[in-house]
Image 1 (cartoon, rainbow, N blue to C red):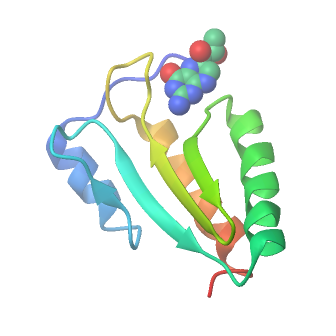
Image 2 (tube, rainbow, N blue to C red; image 1 turned 120 degrees about the vertical axis):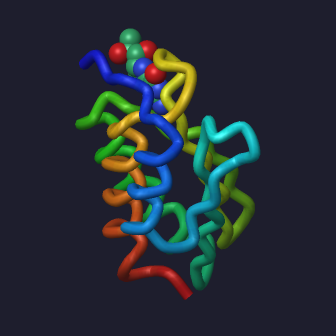
Length: 101
Ligand SMILES: C[C@H](O)[C@H](O)[C@H]1CNC2=NC(N)=NC(=O)C2=N1
């Protein structure tokens, strides 16, 4: 799926629909740290998010230690943020909704 890079104003508009996601200084990625009760909850979230990512053919950069998952999203093919990053961010919010502390 060919995606157009979003302009800064469009990115900021999209961010208002999310909570806890931070734009990097270059405006090229968004990040969030998810905290869970324990490793099983964190890994459950990652499993659901991975399935959503595969469906979208859009994949996260992430780092997990025990109950914490640091996520960064961007579209490397477009050199910045696209609609797909926000679709995946929203899918991650849904996946996390049950397990977040
Ligand atoms: C060939 C394949 O469809 C592409 O490389 C996809 C796969 N997943 C991807 N994930 C992310 N985050 N950005 C991309 O540009 C991207 N491109």
